[in-house]
Image (cartoon, rainbow, N blue to C red):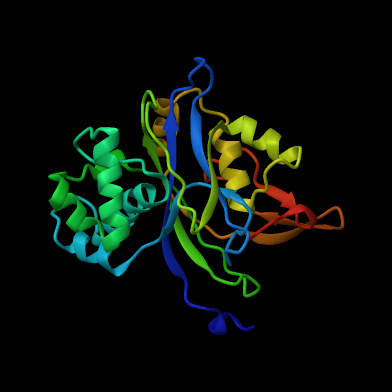
Length: 258
């Protein structure tokens, strides 16, 4: 397929939700196992997230923010998708109880848009709490869909929260250290697509959410578009070496790309 025949990219937002480890060790992050029937990343362990909806853009247009409407819409999508997929509330000024979060999620699943939920619950957005971390935009005609995905960080602190799976798209929710997730992948316990593996390797370097936030703020977000390069007669999938990632390539034979 020629480059001008590739499907239009789908704007999406993904959230890496941190919590403090119950045993005082490395911070934990929330991951989801996608339903095997899903077209994109079926059966893979990923971070919560999804496409940016028209209602997200509508809400963004109504807000007075310091950053552009496209960025605002992506952060709104990050808040909405996290609530929809996991039952967690991030990016909100208030600190809702578990019952309030459950009520908000019910409203969201019924209506599909975040704005009515915010109005009904009396909540206000705190989009500064949704921290830009990365942006991945593969360009490969063999992929069933091409997502232009912005990755964000969010912090739950103690992590004393209730989780509930969205069984329509996902089959499992779990907290894990980034290094533990990589070990589980090496043992075949979970499966990872290329961007998730690279992000976990980056996340494994942080001893706290504050460390992750500091690096995210110090390293400008650039759009990552992987490419294929030859190394010692073998094809590798590569990314830029100045985007904050400790490992920038993987043999193409071992790559899972969704």
